Length: 112
Length: 114
Image (cartoon, rainbow over all chains, first blue to last red; front, side):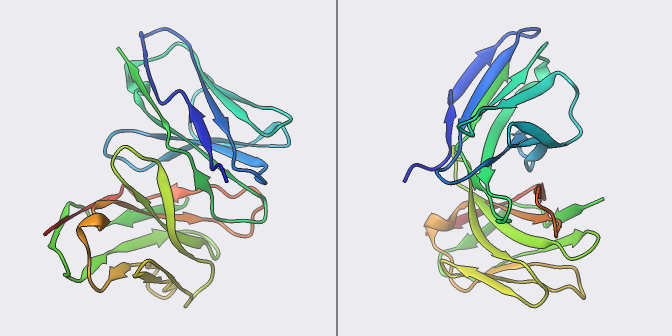
């Protein structure tokens, strides 16, 4: 049973560029959330998707955007990258009835 | 707003020692509480959870009891192993909510030596 799959695992981008990260949720899950984990910190909630709509959003600028597809997979897009966007980006999937989430292994983004 | 406070690490123990990692929270209502573990280079794994006051979550020898009167959810293990070395995160999610999100603490690194 495949869990949450994220791609790519590592990524290096230049300041000002744009990046797209991808996530496939665990089978049976229909909700996808994205978290940003800076080095030495706990994950911070970016946004959550359900039924292809953004349902909740954390305190992140509009440079962070996302999408959920009919097969429940999701993308996270970040425009105009800043050095401070360097972090581990985690995708978590779940269902509306389940308070626990399954996390992927993350995408390590480095902005230089 | 919601917040989680964990004891700062690293916590350094010898194998077979007793472990306690403190966690307190601030939240409105009756949140659900979680402990997640992150091994080096990996994502987060759910270790245990408790969804109401006085519940005890347990898994792999780890335990935590939801204490509403002290707003705490301390993680304990009677005898740690080297393989328990990881970063542990306490987290909460509000309830009831159909779109619950997790609020995490900053994490506590555990280092267990042979």
